[in-house]
Length: 362
Length: 207
Image 1 (cartoon, each protein chain N blue to C red):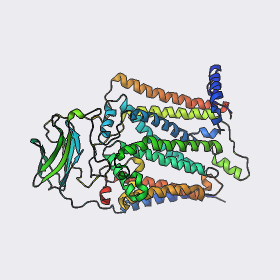
Image 2: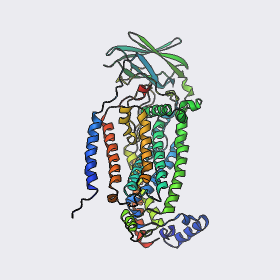
Image 3: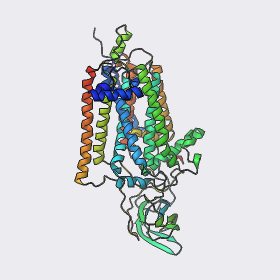
Image 4: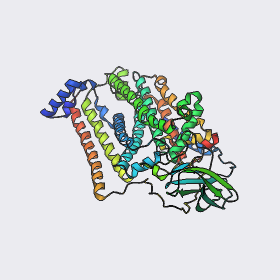
């Protein structure tokens, strides 16, 4: 199998790689990579991973200046934007990369669903992927609160309402859990420690299972094997080339986020005013907004729970061995129905005027 | 025998369902949120460093009427001038707290047909660090019922306004902008080279 030594052409590069690999055993991480794995649809997970690295790096920089107490949080962000070295650019890269990562996570999920790659033996990795989706949403939610502007403050209000809805199970989300420590500080801790740690552990599991099972074959090839044809090829490319391509897309993502940041800074809304609701949530939470309008705050809890539960059950409901979309019409139709509904809710939420939800519950 | 492609039917079905769903969703009633409100004012933040500013929002007031805003405490009174409520009986105004104000508890009074009072804690300016503390809503509690945003603008203040808050792109010199834009371009180009190089490696290094 080719290694990074293949990429580092020339005697010097090869010797350097051999020296490092001999000591660290990095080639042990490699796994067979089929040719199709370098297509954009199959490399979305890798782009997401590099996006996470960018967020991690920029997040460390921002943490040097952020003050996670209510008295100073928003002012420290204004300081980051206006005064901290490259603060506005780094914050912009952090923000725009987070948005792109959300898109690539969803597209990755859609690709896996479309190609039936969640099927045996990859059910567990599908569930881990759902955990990573939840972690990504959690990072976006907590990051929104940390801004401590009107949008963030209203998001915190919803967080506290979730605590009420969850009852004893919502203790962590409640301000009463640690009355001497502002909940903003705990959400900050979730943003920089708890969620990244959970995400890292899940990622390790995700990668290990990809290595264990290999990259899923193209659906048509997998179906031919089910019908008694030849087994799909597991090679054709190399792990090193796969990594290099991911890194390439990662650099493109970083360059694009930097360019966007120079033109469009990450938003910071007005200072929060208690008792009012005049903002809408970020786009990834927007489909929930009409549900909250129609069915109240409880929908904000139960709709995501139902959605994640339904996704988690997919591999156990779709038991046919075939993976081609045309051989799974019902599941493809269901998936497209859900996507259409989410799209309709998103558009509807964008068009309606903001409604107050928290005050209704009080 | 002709066979219909199985995915065509679901796609047509989905398109129809999505259209029907959108139509259905748009006809569902939105829960009402309006209600009679008692006259009230709220401050954000409830404590501030002298020299900072505070937002005051009023609601439940008589529409299109004037209110005088005053800060009072001890023997000190600061007149912030007059605000006018909008058609819904609401206003919002930003008050610049004088930098020389001694620390302590003060009242913000909204004087009209009735006098509404909210407490404001002022910290001496010397306590400010970097970045300047900006007390915000109670960290633990959910937003409490209170005023609704209004279109009220800033009112005359008795002290200089603090440095404007940065919320947009930072002004940059052409050189700095060029370097950053060049870096963005360089990163994207390097990425493109790696993507292309990986394509070339793919055939050469079968695993």
